[in-house]
Structure formats: C-alpha cells, structure tokens
Image: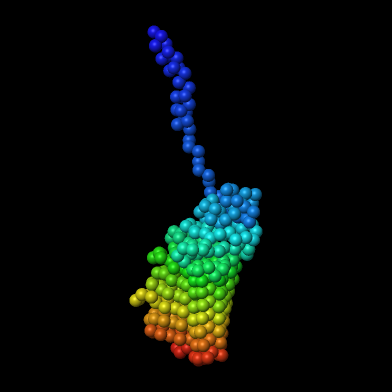
Length: 323
C-alpha cells in the first residue's frame, strides 16, 4: 500500500508538467521575423539592427538586403562605403548619389554588385558610386540573370575588368535601361551586353576612357540596343562594337543624337546580321570613323557629322531614309 500511495502522489505531481507540454504543442509556432518593404543603411548603422527604420539602420547593403522583402527598397541615409552585394530577387537601391559600393578583394573576378535573380525580377540601382579602386580583378555590375536592370544617376569607374556586364543567360527576354550615368576608366569595356534575348537602352550615358571598348554588344540570339543623347569617347578600341557570336544570331544597335569621339574606331560592325544604324550624331577624332567586317553593316540616315577622323571620314554607304 505504501508503494501504491507513493505512485499516486508522483503521478498527481507530474500532471501539471504534462498539461503544460500539451498546451505548448497546441499553441501556434512563433513566426519568423518578417522582412520589411523598406530598409535603411547608414554609416552609423549596425548589421545587428533590424534595418526597418531610420532609427535602426544596418551598416551594409548585404545585411539590409537580407532584411528586405521581394520588390522592396533599400534607402541609403548618408555617405559611406556600404560593401559589395549579391542580388537574388527583385529590389530597388536608392543611393541618393552618395552610396559608395566597392568590389571585395580576392576571388575570381568579383563584382561590386552581382545579380543572380529569377526570370522576370526587376532590379533598380539608383544614385550609387561604384569604384573598383584598381583592385585586380574586379567588375562593377555583373548581371547573370533576371528580368531587367535599371541603373540611373550613377558613377561606375576604376574597375580592372568591365564597368557593367549584362550577360543574361535566360532564353526569356531580359532588358536593361541605363540613364544619366558615367562609366569610365575601366580596364575592360565600359558596358558589355550579351545574351540570347536582350533589349536595352542607354540614354544620357557617358562611356569614357575605357581601355578596350565603350559599348560591346555580342549576341548569341537577338539583341537590340538603342543609344541616345550619349557620349562615347576616348576608349582604346571601338566606341561601339557589335558582333554575332553564334551562327544565326542578330545584333542591332541604333545610335541617335550622340557623340562618338577620340576612340580608336568610332563604330565597328563584325559579322553577318549585325547592323549599327546612326542618325543625328557626331563622329570625330577617331582613328577610324567606322569599320565593318565579316558582313557587318554600318548605316547612316545621311544627317551625321563625320569629320576629323584620321581614316574613313565618309558617310557609310546605303543611306537610310526616315519613314
């Protein structure tokens, strides 16, 4: 009997623990910390903050990006270097002209901003200064996949490789829009555009003093690029180069109201089904005004100023007519 009494006492004493455990199982799980639609970074911030308001900003873009919901915005509050960033989904970065972003040292061609997003994702980069500080090897922006890339009111300079590489791997249409931006003093091309299905616009863009080319377009499918109201000057190779990398690929570049000056070659169209069309532009001070090879074509609307080049000062043949 003593044994049975002791057993009853112990069972009764254990009941509250069992009830508590049962109630805990019935309660909903605590939600994970929600990502914010708008996050903030500051020179005085900390990456241990939640980044969700101006009072608790993060220190680096990577930490803020991790705390930002899809299609959200990252706001830069003051001047500082905010570190490199890899983007895997849709986001907007509002740098306000004072956000500095530098590529990390070491690695295989690291970029200040790497974009590995999903098809259809929209990436917006506004008001940033990307400076490679001559580290070897580095790239400004490396776009590997996504729906679109918009760069506005920015400076991209001093990278030992290219300023921007837009190399969309998707078979779906990818687009880029660059405006009011300086891309200069890079060791490769200022802007490299490649891919299977790409449309792009450069508006009020300066591609200057890049070691190889200002704009390099290479198609493995179909690429259409429009350059308007821009300056492409002082590049070591062609100001604008276009080529078809694979058989059957098509590359079309339209240049309007722009200055192509002091490059080794103004325009260089290389390969069949490669066309550079030029209207209301000045082509001057280049070693060659324009060149073609392997069936490539440079076409003019007959309203350009082609003068002051060391070679090929003439208007391209087969003039186009406004429709």
